Structure formats: structure tokens, C-alpha cells
Length: 253
Image (cartoon, rainbow, N blue to C red; front, top):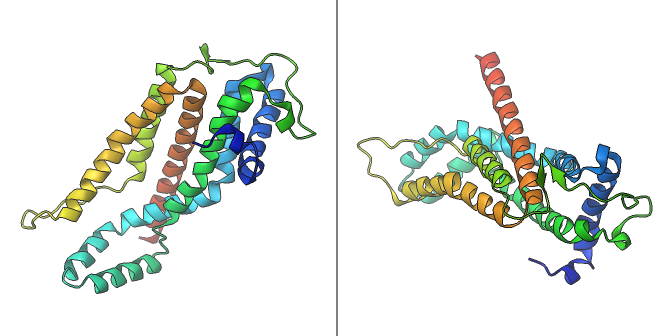
């Protein structure tokens, strides 16, 4: 994690921290009762909407990847003795279906500095309301910030309710996004690669939500609220893409 004194200068401050900090303070000023909880939800929706074109491409690619998974397994079996030809055929399949297998990685790399910036916004900028970090058209709230949300303090650590919500929404988001495991034939010996993939999917499905719960519980309810809202946005987006894919498939039949 970047030290705060380093974060206060340079491109990270200008591109990520300052816009998010000002957006949050601006939203706090306009929401009824200067509710920080409502402002965090709106800021999360604003950030996710800004990233929607990238996240949409990623989700569509993952949806297509799930649909061609049986074909990929078939190609792997047909060219199991020629890895170079196997890779070439799989890339041809990706191009034919307009799949970018690296789109999810690009989205993660873009979101990482945003998550770091939000951490500093919630833990450094918001409690101290640093006036020097505000734009000229953004003013500090006149009254004391309302840190209560659903009868819980967003500044308090170890909020098990919000942490559970963050972990649960992460579980359902991963469940929707991960491809369904392809069962091996009874006559086929399980390979190390298939077993590793199965193990990795299991860890992603069950271990990551536990990690999200632990991080949210140890930091604050503000982070848990951001995480849960972001996960719910992703879940709604995944369901929309899946429903649209079903309608396209039915129309083409």
C-alpha cells in the first residue's frame, strides 16, 4: 500500500485520488442529510458506470468463453500431441467468436489503482476533510458528516453484518462469472492441468469470498459497503448479459 505522503503527489493523486475524493464530497453535499453511506453507494455506481464499457466487454467475452468451452476441450483432445497446433486452433476459435481472453485482466489492472484511491479517500481524506485537496467548485460540508447507515457506523471496524454482505455478494458474483466445470469422461484419466483448473475454480469460488469478508471486517463498514455495492452491480450486469445471450440464441434457432 502506498504511503499517504507519497500518494499526495504525482499522477496517482491527480488521476485517481483527487477526482474520487472530490466526487464523494460533492455527492455528500447534495444527498439528503449529508449521508456518507448513500454517497458511497452513488460513488460506487458512478465508478462502475464509467468502467461499464470495459466490464461489458469482459463479461461478454467470459460468456462467450463459457459457451465454447466444450469446443475448446474437443480441440485439446484432438491436438493433445501437438501443443503448438492446439494453441493455434484455440486462438482461431477465439477470433471466430470475437473472444478476448485477456479482457478480464485489463479490467482488473484498471480497477486496482481505483481501489487503492478509494481506500485513501475513506480512511485518510474523508475523516479529516482535507480542504486543500478539493477543487475550487467543491465545498466542504457545512454540517458534521452523517457516518451512520442502516443504524451502523461506517467509520467503525469489525462490522460483521456489512462484512458478511460483502462476502456473500462476492460469492454469488464469482459463481455467475466462473465457467461451469467440464466433467471428464470416465475413460479419460484426469490430467494435472484439469485438476489444477478445478482446484483454482474451487478456491476462487469459496476462498476469495472469505478473504473479502476478512478484509471488510478488519477495515471498516465503508469499504464493505463499497465492495457489496460493486458486487451487486456486477451481479446485475452478469444476469443482464446472460439473459440477452439466451434471447439471441433462441432467436437464431
